[in-house]
Length: 103
Image (cartoon, rainbow, N blue to C red; front, top):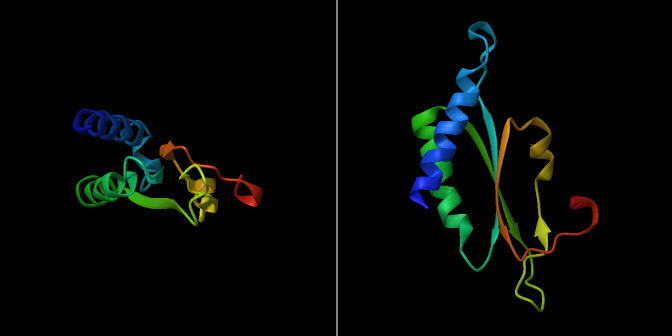
């Protein structure tokens, strides 16, 4: 897991630094957590803190929630409008059933 986070950090840093010098802005990253089984909210919360502290990246963390369905899946994901302004998105979902306007 640590290697994956390092690779993602290097990738996002390279994308950010590839912009022309006068056009650089704070990178906006959206992290989506929705894995009940693997407790992705803990991993992504730590990664969010790391990016904000060490890379100067603006990070929005969306967490799937709501009642679990009969298959132990989350059914709600609030805040998806944050994706409209995202420069990069990291999705950590497994067995999540999102429907309705959120999609």
